[in-house]
Length: 406
Image (cartoon, rainbow, N blue to C red; front, side, top):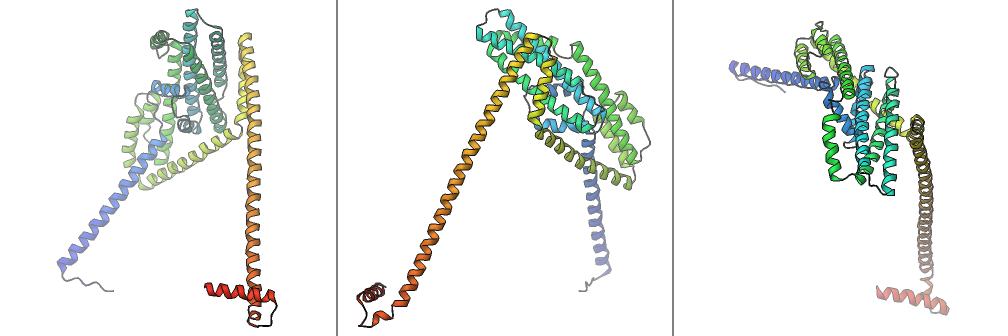
């Protein structure tokens, strides 16, 4: 097909319009590429600007107040990048556990100060003390994790210990709600404001460690991005390392620097960040699968190890008894579950046999109808003769009657 242009003016206008469309398309493509790169940079740099806020978030998670699965999967991303990320997550968990121990001890002191407990309430208080002792043992376990180990191993330990912290904290909190009065709760809240936040020396020290590791983590990540993008200016890396600039401001400066990079370098950086994103998704799924496969066995082993770390013989005895009772309940539950599954299989087998029996009966009925139809068609011509037997006459009459009815 030929396209005819009427005049030179029309030709120029047509080319101009086409060129504008190409420019718009190219600009849209560049904008999309910049948007993708900006999103990938968000993935590459974790927001570690304020260690206190992070620790509070982790503390809330370990207290069971947030969606654990989604949060934990995001948290192990930092561990995948190396030792600095692993140290940050372990320190955050340590801070959360430390704070829970501080508050827990104050709760116990507040209840004991009341002095008027029934036998059942005393038993509940004893369970709370045992839970606190196990939480303290859990803190020792967390401190024993080597962040320099293989990241998958560290990530698995982090997730497991965090789950243990959630379980133990919830157990303690549920028991505390049974014993605390409104006035005692108010006293504890006032105590927490002045003793269990960053004004506490131990918590402040952990915060400082988190901030140092966060700066190292972010400067390391930016340094790697600079290397791929071909940026030789290391001033921004140094500022992040020393904590002179926030991650938000560093991200803005990084994006400005990337604008002046060569297109090939930008494509290489985008490809690397996209590849990292896919690898992180696989990494998180593998960690989750490993934990699911060994959940029951590893949970028991960690709990037994914590019981041995408890110094108080009376509390250790309480924990041992609780552990044995828990195992017995789990064993009984599994037996009941197996019995229910067996009964369900038997019911399904019976239903299947009944369905098969109905199918056989239906098939036999169809075969009988087919054979009856064949017999009728064979005898009908005989019924027309007057010399047939009575039986044949009856069949013929029946056939005649069926014909009449029709």
